[in-house]
Length: 151
Image 1 (cartoon, rainbow, N blue to C red):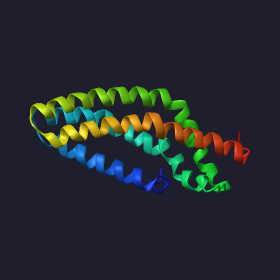
Image 2: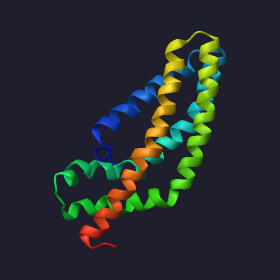
Image 3: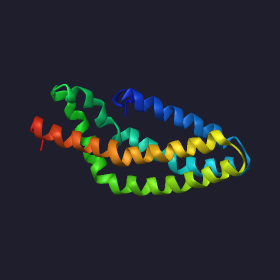
C-alpha cells in the first residue's frame, strides 16, 4: 500500500507512535520489557491498518465537498477488507490494550511518566479507531459503492 493513500495526519501519528514505542523498548527494566510486548502485537496491527483500515479515509475530505470521481473506487476493496476483518481488528485491539495496561503499570512503577502517558495515549487511539475511524472507513466504502454503482 502506498503511504500516499493514508491521510497525512494519520500517517504522521502512526510514525510518531512507532518511534516512541521503539524508544520505550530500549529502556530496559519492566518498562522496556512491557514495551517489547506491546510492539509484538501493535506493529503488525498497524501494518494492517495502513493496508486496508485507514486508506478509505484518504478520500473523505473530497467526499465531504461533494466530489465523487471514478478514481475513488480504489478504496472500496480496502473498506470491504476492513469490514471482513473488523472482528479480528477489534480482537487485536483487546490484546494491544492489555499489553498497554501492563506498560502503563510498569512505567508508573519505574517513574517513566512519559511512557505511562504514551500508553494512555495509545489506549485512547485504539478507542478512536474503534468508535470513529474504522466505522468511517467502512461507511466511505459503502457510500462509494452506492454513488459509483459498484454495489
